[in-house]
Length: 88
Image 1 (tube, rainbow, N blue to C red):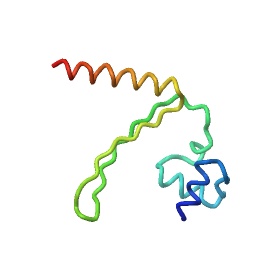
Image 2: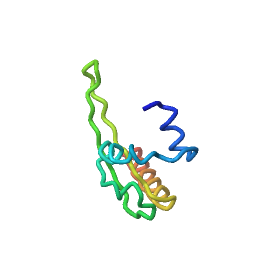
Image 3: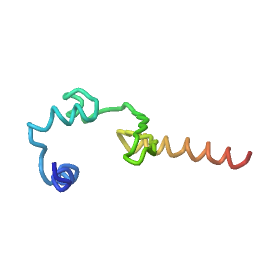
Image 4: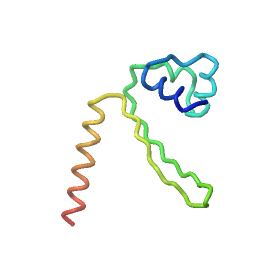
């Protein structure tokens, strides 16, 4: 798939064609129905460890936050913890 196609989906310029939906669900590790849920209050944290072509490892954490309130709450927790670490 072209990068432009995916960008247009994210920007709501174009809708996702139904033929891509099963593969997208597989890629994201969710049920197809999860792609259509808009009222989620669940915060997801996914840790990914991927080996790159040069044998280095890319460690990352992805936070999926459903609303601004969740973003603000996580931000406050992280700031508090970082401040506590700096004081040690």
